[in-house]
Image 1 (cartoon, helix red, strand yellow):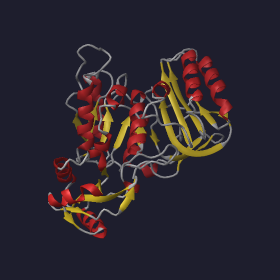
Image 2: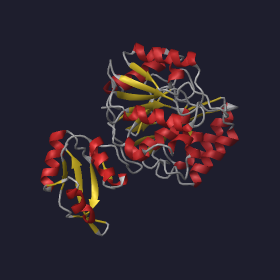
Image 3: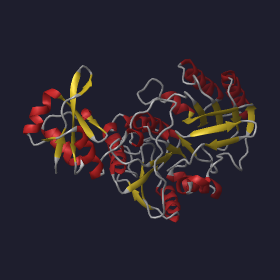
Amino acid sequence: MALWIDPPVWPAHGRLWSHLISDTSLAELHTFAAAQGVPRRGFERDHYDVPASSYDALVSAGATPVSAREVVRSLTASGLRKRKAVAMAARAPGRELLRPPRLRPGDQVAVVTTAGPVLPARLAAGVARLEGWGLRVQIGEHVLDRHPRLVHLAGLDVDQASDLSAAWMDPSVRGVFAARGGFGTQRVLDLLDWRRLAEAEPKVLIGFSDLTVLHQAVAARLGLASVHGPVVSSLGEATDDGAERLRRLLFEPEAVVDLLAGIESTTWVSGRAEGILVGGNLAMLTAELGTAFDRPASNGVVVIEDIAEAPHRIDRQLTQLQRNGWFDDARAVVLGSFTDCGDPAQVDAVLLERLSPLGVPIVAGVDLGHTRSSISIPLGVLATLDADARTLTLACPALR
């Protein structure tokens, strides 16, 4: 391994800084930095930022002084250089997110759970469908665990976080599927080392419902687009059309242009608007308000769905989001399924009354959410909603 450090000539925060790199591997760079007391928070994509006061000590410890140009050349030659535009990093709300690579037959994907208990039979049916698509499926060590005290959770938070981190950091894994939704994902978010997760190569995350908070966190902390789609335990029971829509989005993204093609919907507010797809489960969006993972609807085409929430609770959640400014500068709204939420007429009345004052195009009745035939939506991708034509058109393929 060769360690390189350029002169401390880069000004920031009232000090001068150097860049410390390895031309061999990031793992060895982290080991060297830790041994010399360089804090991990100083790591940025492919290098450590170190203050001028540490320069001499790092050179004495084995880092070779070179020019800034040599640092860039070495990173590029080793394949370790990560430009900001193509690296996972925090991105401001309202911006288009980094699109992960598409899946291909033969790829390995991981199945993890961060929420409720998983039924083995339903998991097996979903895995069989993934394998039918030509994927190699790796099941997380703790997917079938049960929490020793709380029946609504699939195992201990620390174990779920460990499974997710291991899958995300595994270079052989090309996509991460949630085993199921339910409750509990919020408990896992703060146990994840987001700076370390940002060092992995981008990969696609798939899930919905409780996984909305993980989609929000991946967008906020990693700047990465993801897919709001069936979890594995529901994929086996999905209709052929619902499953095929997800498969095409993951494997043939250039073939998916209009996300609403072939499904019924209703125009509530006319108009046409462009924005970044954002949203998911209404209850979870509300629950994340005020946290470090909240991702508001600025410049967004907002997608919302829910299950088992009475009309008065939907009213309360929408009101809370509006009072907190979550809908500020939203460009359009797509309303999915509100399954088992009571009288559909009352649900529609609440949604219309709370959302129509936004003055943006609204399409309702989209088959999205807790249904067997639900469509899949790429979050973080630029799209145009034409409420009159009832189309939701992607500006570019959902995945690279």
